[in-house]
Amino acid sequence: MQIELHTPIADEDVLRLHVGDTVILTGIIVTGRDAAHQWLYKKFCDPAGDPSSEEKVISEELKSYLHRGVIYHCGPVVSGVDTRQYRILAAGPTTSIREELYQADIMRLFNIKGVIGKGGMGQNTLEYCQKSPAVYFHAVGGAAVLIARSVKEVLGVYKLEWGVPEAMWVFRVEQLPVIVTMDAFGTSLHEQIRAASKKALDHLIGTNV
Image 1 (cartoon, one colour):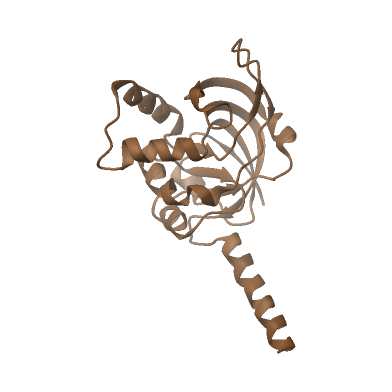
Image 2 (image 1 turned 180 degrees about the vertical axis):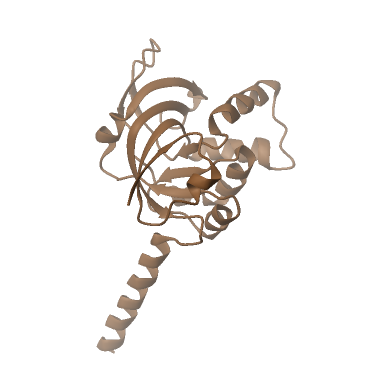
């Protein structure tokens, strides 16, 4: 099933989505990789966090984009950084499981309704998706240039001092194709594939004993 979805995303729209659905996403998304997740968790989720006044301002601005929004595990390739005439050359997904330690807390902090990446996430994120509700979208790896064509505007960038791939870029996208692989009903396509693969491997090992 193919569904058109716009940010900000309402709960009822999340609950329409099931594993296997193709979604055409339009709206605002924010990129975030390892540095972003570690910083957000350490400064704003950890009770011992002590953000500066500047960091608090950034957090409030991010809330305006991420509330009922989408975070994208992506390290884009960007030209025009020196002149601030940004052009997104490639915007493929990076491996999501690296953010599993932080993801649920960050989704809760900003009321994020969707995560885009590749490879899926773990049990903590899946459980949060059920409670929230929220979903995980799989973007096609190896299609970085194609995905970049969906980026119509760069609305801002935060923490550029981390480097272009690790900075948090705010994109306005149109017609970005993704697939639901973890839904709000506790179903994970990634876990189903792992279980089926293990069963097949155990069978092969058993037949060769």
